[in-house]
Image 1 (spheres, one colour):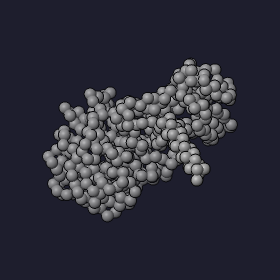
Image 2 (cartoon, helix red, strand yellow):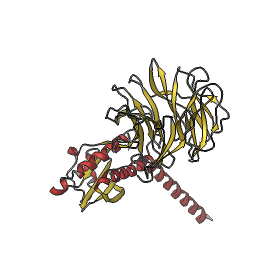
Image 3 (cartoon, helix red, strand yellow):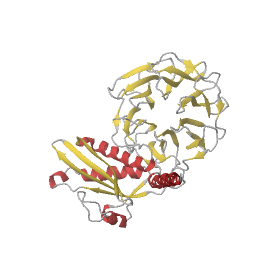
Image 4 (cartoon, one colour):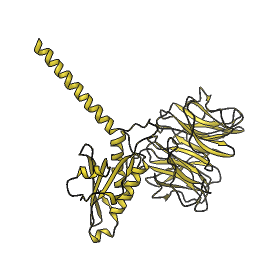
Length: 436
């Protein structure tokens, strides 16, 4: 009996010891995003030295710039300048002490080679404190897929320190009049790889993503009526799915992709309607003499927030997705617009006019914890959440003409990501994309 008791105590000790080790590891691995200030992780990026001929491709430079921009963008990492690095080759064992001496807690290495038209990259991610390789990945593809390779590995590094998916392969669609008419464009999350999606030389508005990231809804006046269209990104095909006389605008898919909420004309004003994903069976969710607009779904698909002037001025309201249990959410400001429900469901971002200018705010679905995110910087409108809920894209004319900006969800680190002065508005951030 005594031996059994000793064995039980020993086993209990082992379990406690393992738990403490896991707890210590969790503290090392995951960042506390609830903290008001996140300490950025000092990071070094070491690239292989190309041959003279390969150097003409500037691949090492491109990898360093893309990867450092991704990691800095995340708000989690700081990049140590290469001139401070110790003498170290990608192909030799890591001198952890030497990198710790310059303050690096993370080391990322990348070797690469070009074979014909094929680029092969090999990334490795080291923890200099624990003195071990955390992960690594090899990619093979054409040279023009370099950005995609780097973004993929940046997502791996980000997730290993935060416990959540990175957004470095996501896209943003938006409206620009750079061509002379308002057309729909798409770009990477950081403003690179801008491509035009519509070419109808009409007015195209309010793009929004399907839950699977394969399609984009938008409203177009190409047939003189504001009709709703669906663009298949894989084929480029566009089809009209709602052409009711008057408005067919502000459309957003339900989280399960089966329904679309939008505003359409009914009686003397605009109302929130629900239609099937193919445009059939329109059902009004709101009624009365007010104008209702800009629906946004809760992540679970059970509720819809929208804008209404039923109280006299535009305010944000929430209702069940069948139109029942309507309640008012905002009570401050004379003009509140463009609500966007966060992917985590805990916040709704919106624009409010104060002193003649719009600013971005967030508020909880219960009406508590209202917070201003922009201030004294022109008009700031059209908030759209990144799929991990850590960033918000928005439009701002703080530099004279409207352009697309991105900020952290708490309003910090605001930076412009479009620069072609076309009056860029209405950003819509994609969901996580399985492949793009």
